Each structure stands twice: as structure tokens, then as C-alpha cells.
Image (cartoon, rainbow, N blue to C red; front, side, top):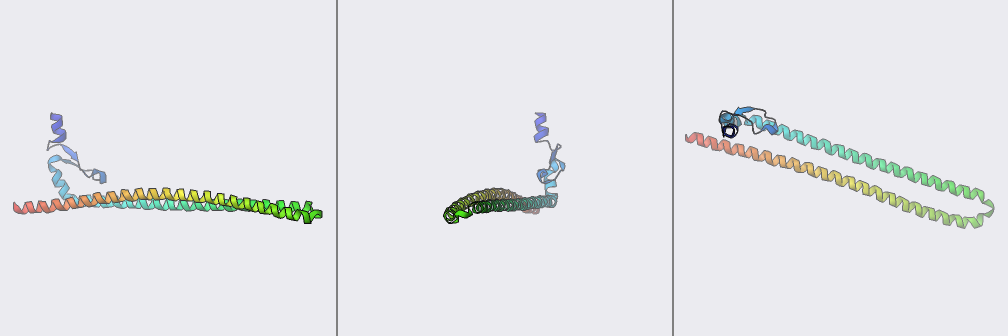
Length: 186
């Protein structure tokens, strides 16, 4: 019972400032808590603004970092795609040259066969390119969605903090006006 009194009701017990979460580390006698809250409003507001600014800076840094990572990933995928296309084109050209050198005496017959083979290879290459492009697009879309989800979460956090901040400031001004009205009545 005494422990409960000391912990929850005793005016001579030291209690932490309710704004410890934004950086006010004051320990105050319970009986002086209202005075502390009134006198330190400016300090609490400054702490809240600083916390808000830090949160906003962190969100901005994360967005910039994610955008840069996404751009780097897209650039790397594009380079890999171009390298693969070049390799396939080189392989195709080499194959065509070998066939032409081995069968010069049968040019007329092999020319038709060669054109058919080139068409098949080009179709396969086009399909492969389409497949690779589809995979690249899917990866880019997935990364974009992830960035957007994270951005949305950070924005929600920012707006929640802003709503709490506005509520605290509104409550303070309401209490301050009420306190002034009560003081003037006395």
C-alpha cells in the first residue's frame, strides 16, 4: 500500500517527465510536474520539432538511398542484358561464318538452309530477349513496389508523428488558455 502510494500518488516522489520519449530527461517531484510542463513547454516543443526534423531527414536519406539502389540495379541489369545480347550476336555471327567457309562449293543449296537457320536463331534470340526483358521488368517492378511500400510506411510514420505533435501543441494551448482563464478568475 505504501509502495503503491509512493509509486502512483505521492507528491514528493520523483517522476520522469512525460516527454522523455522526445528527449526531456528531467526527473521532477510529482507535485511540481504541472509547473514543469507549463514552464518547459517551449523546451518540449523544441525537442518535438528536432525529433520531427530528424525523422524527416531519416526518411529523406532512406528514400534517396533506395532510389539510388534501384537505379544502380536497373543499370546493372541493362548492362548484363546488353552483354548477353552481344555474346549471342557474336556466337551467331561466328556460326554463320564457319558454315559459309565449310560449304563454299554448295553455296546455292546451303544459302536457303542458312537463311532458315538465321531466321530460327533470330526468333530464338528475340524470344530470349523478350524473356530477359520480361524478367528485368519484373525485377524493376518488384523493387519499385518495395520502395513504394517502404516510402508509404515512412510517410505514414511521419504523418502519425505530425498528428501527435499537433495534438500535443493543441492540448498545450488549450490548457494554457484554460490556465490563464482560471488564473484571471482567481
